[in-house]
Structure formats: C-alpha cells, structure tokens
Image (cartoon, rainbow, N blue to C red):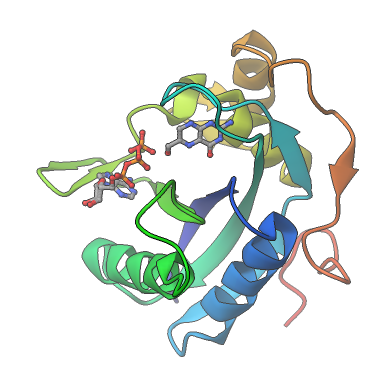
Length: 176
Ligand SMILES: Nc1ncnc2c1ncn2[C@@H]1O[C@H](COP(=O)(O)OP(=O)(O)OP(=O)(O)O)[C@@H](O)[C@H]1O
Ligand SMILES: Nc1nc2c(c(=O)[nH]1)N=C(CO)CN2
C-alpha cells in the first residue's frame, strides 16, 4: 500500500495544455506512481515573479506512490527537466513546475523539501483545482474548498476549466 500524495502542475510558456497533459501522463507512466485522479485545468494570472509573464494553466493530480518523499520529489523534477529542455530558446521562464503539495499526513521541513508545501494553503491556483478534484479534501485539518474561497482569486480568470485528461478516472478514483 502506497502513500497518497497531491502534486501541483503549472505552466505558462509554450503549449501549456500539452505540457500539463504530457506531465500527467509521464507521472502516470512512472513504475512506482499510480495516477488516482486529476483536476481540470484552471487558468490564472501569474502570482509574483517578473511583470509581463503570460497567464498560467494549473492543475493538480492525486497519486499513490511507493516512492519516499524525496523519491517522489526526484520523479517530479525529472518530469520538469524533460519539459524545461528547449533547444531554440535561452533560459527563460519555466515551461513546467511540478510541486509536492502533500504526501500523506507527513510533515517535513528539510532544506530541499517542505511538505505540506509552504504556500499551498494560500494559493488559489493550487486550492481551486484541488477542491474541484476532491471537494472533501483537507489540508492540515482545514477544508481545501474553504481555503480556496478565502485565497486570493485567480486574477479574474476562471472558473472556466479545461479537462486535463481525455477521460477522467471514475469518481472516488480507486476502481481497482
Ligand atoms: N513541496 C515541495 N515540492 C517541490 N519542491 C520543493 C518542495 N519543498 C521544497 N522544494 C524545493 O523547491 C525547489 C524548487 O524551487 P522552484 O524554483 O521550483 O520554486 P518555485 O516553483 O519557483 O516556487 P514555489 O516553491 O513557490 O512554487 C526544489 O529544488 C525543491 O528542492
Ligand atoms: N498563477 C500562477 N502563478 C504562479 C505559479 C503558478 O503555477 N500559477 N507558480 C509560481 C512558482 O511556482 C509563481 N506564480
């Protein structure tokens, strides 16, 4: 029995939809990661960072994994790396971010890994798709849907959504 974890995906460069879909499928293809369910994609204005960046597409996925927290971080970074490689462009804004939002009930504060993710509880671009995927979800005992309502908004974008996966897994997710 693995651990349930929630991962946040974000992209604001290139073919953002294709990047998010590719990332979800690559995570699902990992031998020690099972994709349980996925949120729809939401659009949001960039939070922080330099001015003039394009809008983001964000989504979250729930996975079950036998990887350790650092093993899962590494798997996320491998997926990021694959999408950061742009042969024609110099280093620029990233095409893909994959963050660990929660890993079971674990609390960890290491130099390279903090879970739950430090800023997840205030980021609408994480909380809104998470609540859409799992209306009953909690983050450190608090309702994710409630946190999503209290977070800063998506910058005037959304709530129109785009499916992340061609065919969403059945509600509840554990159809095996
Ligand atoms: N929960 C986490 N998920 C992913 N990376 C994390 C986490 N906690 C700490 N990190 C560390 O953060 C680093 C990634 O920083 P990065 O430059 O991607 O931050 P960012 O995505 O720009 O900002 P933010 O952390 O606010 O999302 C990684 O090297 C990783 O070691
Ligand atoms: N809307 C939005 N803003 C961001 C995002 C993101 O994924 N979506 N990621 C960031 C760095 O992780 C910084 N700002």
